[in-house]
Length: 194
Image 1 (spheres, rainbow, N blue to C red):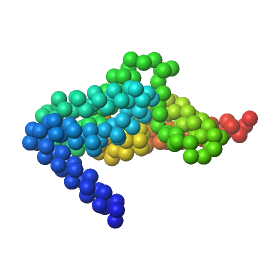
Image 2: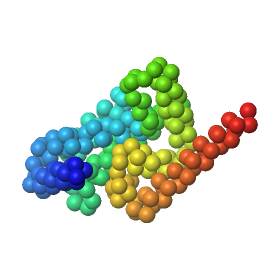
Image 3: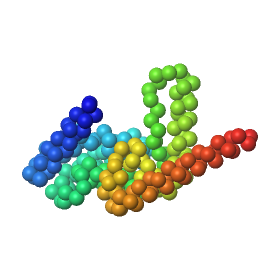
Image 4: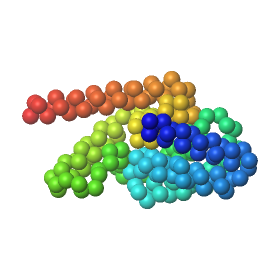
């Protein structure tokens, strides 16, 4: 029941946002975009860039680009997917300027130290392991996984954000998960042989 209420509130907020955009109130719409989607864009940017400083800048650049481009939004797909598409392009530009060794992909969040130092160390090692495995995926598959499981976008929203068909978004995420499972199974087999 609470989930349905949350969905209704989010839906009402999205409708209000679309009303502001269609009414030409770019300033209010950009503010609402920041309030509704800023944190999620930040998590996506952190996952894709691996740097909090870069993620913060991507959020700011995304929101500024959205403010400047709201009048050009054609209403094809959700505003949320449109925003994530902008954020994705901003992240790609940042990653193009770095070398492969400097890139880090922070997909797994390490929670604040709620347990023992050993548990925190284990969580950090697992996060590093997942980042290493993700680096072995095709960039398009890795991106689809991050958009699906970190940004929690639907396949339709992933398709809109990446400029591809929904079936292609599903295929990329599926292929990425399959490859990630293979890599993890390979690690398990190699670990057992030692």
